[in-house]
Amino acid sequence: MTAAEMKRLQSEWKTIGPVRKNKSEVIWSRFRAAADRFFERYHHRHEIGLAAKLAEREALVVELESLAAATDVPANLAEQVHQVRTTWTRSVPVPVPGMKLLSERWQAAMGRLMTDRPDAFLGTDLDPATVIRKMEKLVLRVEALAQDA
View 1 (cartoon, rainbow, N blue to C red):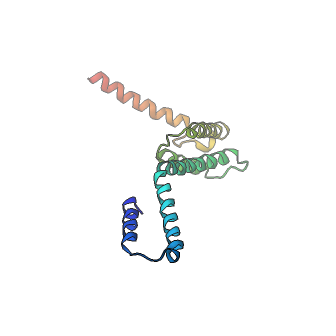
View 2 (cartoon, rainbow, N blue to C red):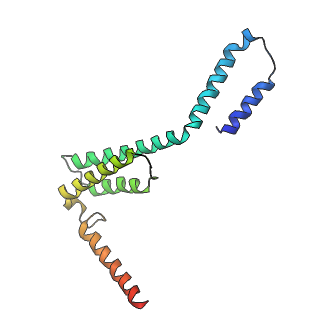
View 3 (cartoon, rainbow, N blue to C red):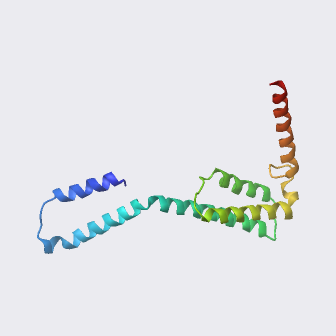
């Protein structure tokens, strides 16, 4: 529901007509309480949205940390890490102080995975040798463009 819709409902309330106060007080209190809750949430919608996004990022970090700490390495570890990483990179940036700590935890978990289980990532986009080869190809293309210019 939008704020405009809520305001329209408040205006509609006023057009219903009068009723004795002792008959309408309870329902008026409910209406007012619901409207107050709506506008309280509406005024804090950005903070609520950021908190939700931060919670989503927290869940991704916890998932990556559990993969890094697992004693039984799943056969599809690289695929699972790739999925979590893709979700992380496609997520909307969260400009809040708590994000710095989450990013540090993310990097630490990713580092543990790369250090402790390098064989699981051979030939993937997380394999350092594969990444370096891709970087080398890009450098060669950029150098060729620079030379031609």
